[in-house]
Image (cartoon, rainbow, N blue to C red):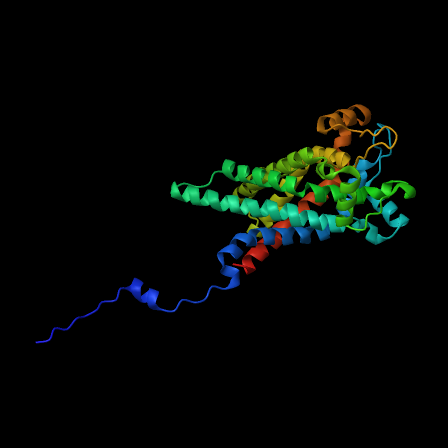
Length: 324
């Protein structure tokens, strides 16, 4: 009698024999790794277009009355009126190319690195059968913010130079055509290292900003969830507004010093800079202009920080949703 051999196919083998669907571009491993950076950059650039006029006014407020304790005390509305009266409404968008370049570099890196660090923390926490701690998330935010601020400093410098150029006498203005033009001309006239002027306060500002956003956003959202009947969306908006206030309060002095250091140029007669660094700038401002000068334009700064964060997060969430 001829023996009959029966071949048993396991589910795993059967699945392996079936034709596998081709992997589309959106779900390629390299694409998935790049998406947090791309989505973060697009979200930040969208937010910048919305708040650029507010940022322009903020910079002009910080530079008004430099070196004089009893100098002018302009208001945000007054600065906006003067800018429009001396030119046109589009002057409020001076430096937009630099602002977009900064977001393309800074926010792309900040959100991209934070997402990458967060995924690594989640994997490690799952392997240890525990949850990611708040300290770990804060550390990821601080690290991502610091790295991104250092990378994005040249674009930030170009933005401040372009926005402050209109304060100079017409004959002394650089009249930068774009962010790239500003970067090239600054490099040629002052040297490439000048592109990182104010880098230290920029990094410290970014870290202080992230601490304010991370700590107070998480705490505010938890308190609102426990003590109010607000919807999840309303809780997010309210927590963002509260976090924006504390982020502004903690970071504004460093943002103020950053603006002063990035705006400064060598005196044509002495060849010296007005400030030697972060501490020297802080000391001179405190002595010559008073401690409260560090918080000039707080309202404008808050109105710039909170909406920018909210728009960035909303757009980033939407982009993450449609690119799943």
